[in-house]
Length: 218
Image 1 (tube, helix red, strand yellow):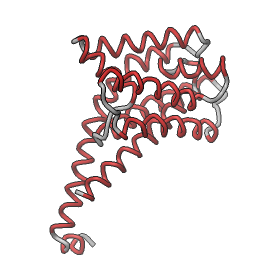
Image 2 (cartoon, rainbow, N blue to C red):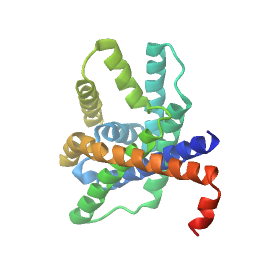
Image 3 (cartoon, rainbow, N blue to C red):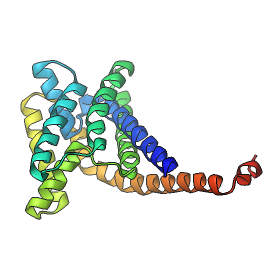
């Protein structure tokens, strides 16, 4: 159980790191537009200062607060770590990654960013250690209203996109691509990540139950 615990947390933290990297890449290609939530965070950054990652954390905190009140329960530790670490990682990657100059290079960086986001989500969700603040709110609304998940998710994206646009966040064809295409990437990355997690855990169990298996592979 200890090894499974370590492996799951390793997948969780790796997923958050990869997810933040993908978000930072799409922000670097912002002339094409960025994801709805990031439009909102960017708009707050543009109007009020601080950093994009900081606004991601602040928004996540209020979302967790609303979700906690709605469910009358304390959010899982994974939700808090998701909220804090993604914001920190976004700011770090934004500082480290140079901004592409040409539209072609921005398009490439943006496309890579979407794929990286999809696999980051797949990795952290496969660990099954708690949904992020925004996903937790989505599940709460679904539970309270009985509406379909896709309706609630799309509705949330439209609302934050609208407020982000009012705040001056970067909106473009990329925003539509992320809103419509990211789900398809996650649909591929999540099963792959779950299979990888199962494979790693099975390998660890084999090594524990049969120490000679380690020697035989050398």
